[in-house]
Length: 242
Image 1 (cartoon, one colour):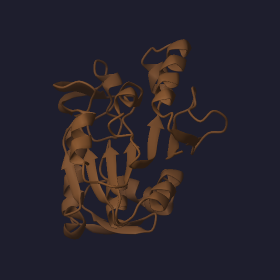
Image 2 (tube, rainbow, N blue to C red):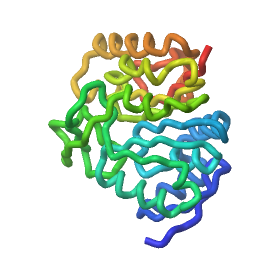
Image 3 (tube, rainbow, N blue to C red):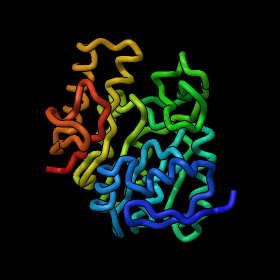
Image 4 (cartoon, rainbow, N blue to C red):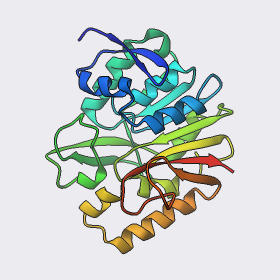
């Protein structure tokens, strides 16, 4: 497809995918406005932005257009094809973005994922690895490997949106959540856990473990009132270094 110029959260870049409906929504401010506002506030030259779950690139491209260097990880084969095309449509930004077709995982090897609909739909998850309408595998990349890639960075902002795998991953992100990481944007998906058969007690335990992994940060939900990490509603949490 031909590249089209888009403007998202004050950042302009080209896209070359088939997701015009999504980009219209993002441009209008109807897609995750609080997350995008946080990216805009936190990101700029001198920042390394780590995007775990890059999908087709809305956060990756926004962060790069705002002046950050970006490490982006996306295991969905169709989504990776689309984010690659979108990055390639921006030659200047592309020099600041390193894309990896991989699933961030606490264990090495291959990771099995699935989607309830189709590859590329932003809903790929390890929680659907045995029940999805579409199934695939991706090579794992360890958090320690990402930390090694970021060894020269003095200031890091991390974003993670992995459709339920965040609970499994967070206890293993110590190498990425040190003093250099000034903030993290983490999407939590308790509804996906419940749909996958986790009980309320199990969700409570997983949430408490995730919150412990973020003990060095002040947590604020961008979407929900009450507890910083909701046990019922999917929401994005902004974690800022204390």
